[in-house]
Image (cartoon, rainbow, N blue to C red; front, side):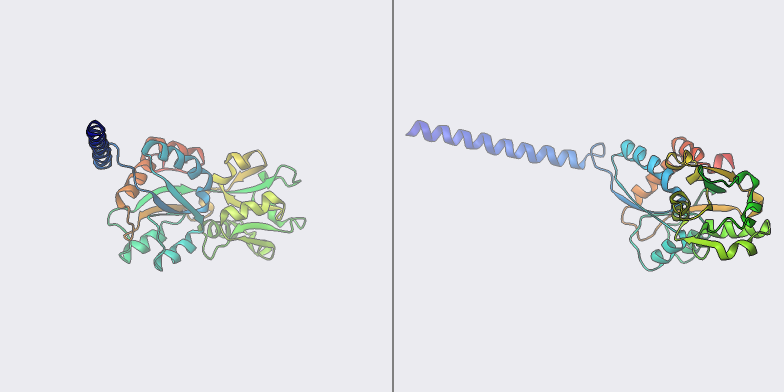
Length: 272
């Protein structure tokens, strides 16, 4: 009986020691900067970034171990949501004016405003369409075109650029009653891709995306036909993960990030 008691005591001591070692090394790993898990961040991004960010974000996550939650939509709608306290860490707008207004209102991290790209617009139609988009915007005068898709110009910068380009080519008055408005430029592209619209004015970044480039043809609208689509990003002051947001923005500015953006037709700071 005495031998058994001594054995049990020794066993319990070893077990307690192992438990303490496990706790010790767990704390060591948690406190070590090399092992600490990067904080997750939430990004509100303009719809024209859909495919570019779905390529860029996995590369960032692989490099950092972080996780990014991406919300895509119209820049104007996100602007309104952020003003009312929407819990985003980063805001990527298709119009730099929106983050500038947030900066003026004191809702951003000072010095974080970044002009990350200049967007471009194109006239796009499906491959099975009889329309020749290389004729440019004058083709919109054709009565056979029943529906023309663009983003809603009330809150989507790409929609405003589309209207300005049509006005420049003097086709807006003939086209305006046939316009189908998408909530954002990505939805406008979906209208044409699905056949709900005959033709559309969409972002070049969407026309170049793998999901769309083999389904249609496009004609690039001259940049001088509309105000430049200057796109801006900012870290929000309400962010609870400011350092992680800064890391994502730095990745966006890196060579790796800019190569991806250029591939989708954006003019990035180095090439502007």
